[in-house]
Amino acid sequence: MDSREILSQNLVRYRSEHDLSQEDMAWESHMSVRGYAQIERGEVQTSLRMLDKLSRSTGLSVTELLTPHK
Image (tube, rainbow, N blue to C red; front, side):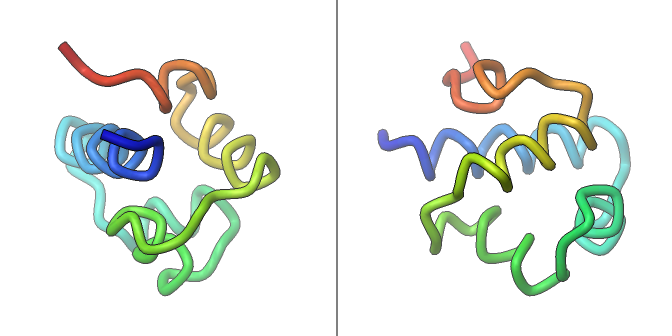
C-alpha cells in the first residue's frame, strides 16, 4: 500500500468518525472540493503544503495521516 492509499483511508475514516462531508473537509482544509476529493480517492500525490493543511484541519499529525490504521 502506498502513501496515497494510506492517506485516503485515513481521511475517509476521519470523515466517517466525525460525520463530515467532503465539502466540510475541503472547507476546513482551505482547498477546493474537487482537490480534496482527488486526494481522498488517491488520484494525486499530495504536497507537503497540502499535508500540512490536512493535518491542521483534522488535528492529526502528518505521521498519523500517513500511518496505516491497525
